[in-house]
Length: 461
Image (cartoon, rainbow, N blue to C red):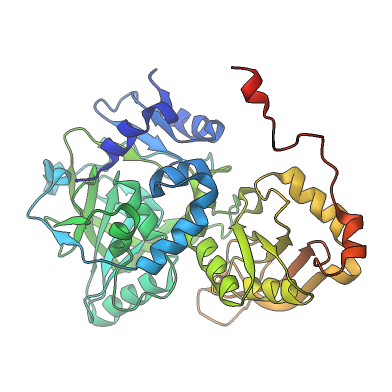
C-alpha cells in the first residue's frame, strides 16, 4: 500500500529534515523559510508525531509526486486527466485505524494542529474532507479549514459549490452531514482532491491510480457512513450540523489576506479520531508562499494547457506564480500568427475558476519560473496601448480585496464576498510572430557565447 511514510522515506535525501525539537508555534515560520518539502521529526508536547509540509510548493516537489521531471509537471497532469478515474478498492481496515478514539476519549488537543497567524482565533487543520451526496451517493472531496473550537468540535469552512450543495440538501432534510477529514495520506490523494473541473458520476479520489499507477485503497470509517484512504495517518470523523454555526476567521486565504475577514460557518461535531501508531501530521501552512497557493491551481494549469492546445496553439507551459496570490497566470506559447495570443488570453481569463484575474502570455525563450525573465518580457515586449486587454464586470474571487461584492445577490454576500465583480486584464508579452521577421529581429535577445552548451556546475565538480 502506498502511503506518506514510504513516500517520505523514498525522497528523504531531497527533503529538508529538522531533527531538533520544534515548538508548535514555530512551525509556521520555519515552513515559510523552507522553500521545499520539510519534515519535522520532533514536536514539543506531541511525542510520537512527525509533521510534514510543502509537498507541492514548487515544480520539484510536484514532480516527485507525479514521478516526472519538473518541466513535465503540467503535461503529466494533463495525462492524468486523459487517463481519467479508476475504481477504488475497499479493504476491511487499514493503518488509519490502528488506534481508535471515540466518545469522551476524543480530544482534538492531542493532535499537533497549528495556529497559522497571530490573528487566528484557533488552531486550524487544513487537510481534505470527504462528504457524500445523500440523494445520489456521489462522493466529494475538498480542502476546508477546520478551526478547533473544543475537544470534540470544529468550525468548517465550505468553499466549493459541490460541498455547499450537499450541505444544503442535509439542511433541507433536517439531517446532519457526515464528514471525515483525512490527514497524512500519500500525496497523490491530495493531488486528486485538487481536481476542480466537472466530474459528474465520479469522485476526485478516483484519479489516484491515474497519478500513481497503483489502485487506491479505501476503508470505511468507524462512526460515519463514508470511506477514506486506508493509508491515512489520522482521520477525524463526525457530523456537520447545518443549523449550528460558529466564527470562522480571521484566517488568510490564498491571497495571503484576511479576506473575507470573519464568517459564520457550520459546526463539525467530532465522533471519532482514528490514527496510525506512528502518525505523520500533514500541515498546510497558509502563508506566505506555500502549498496554499500551489495546490489548488495544479489541475487548473493542466486544464488551461489542454484548452489552448485544443484551439490549435503550440503551448509549452502554464504556471500560476506564487506571488500572484492565485489571481495571476502565465501562459508560455509559440504563436503562429497574429490574433492567437489574444484568443489564448481570452480563453484563459474565461476559465471556469473565479480566481484568474490577470493572464500574461510569453514566448518559449522566457523562463516563466524566473520573475526577472517575466519582468523582462513585460518591459521589452509590451506596448500598453496595443498589448493589454481589459475586461470590466467579470466574476471575482471572494479572496480578492479589489472585487466589489454584488450586494443583495445572496443573504450572506456581505460576509462571504460571493458573488463579487472585478475587472480582468490580459497582457501579450510575446514577440511578433515568426513571419514578421523584420520586426521580430528587434526582439531577439543577446546571449553569451556558449550559452546553454557549457555549465558552471561542470567546472565546480
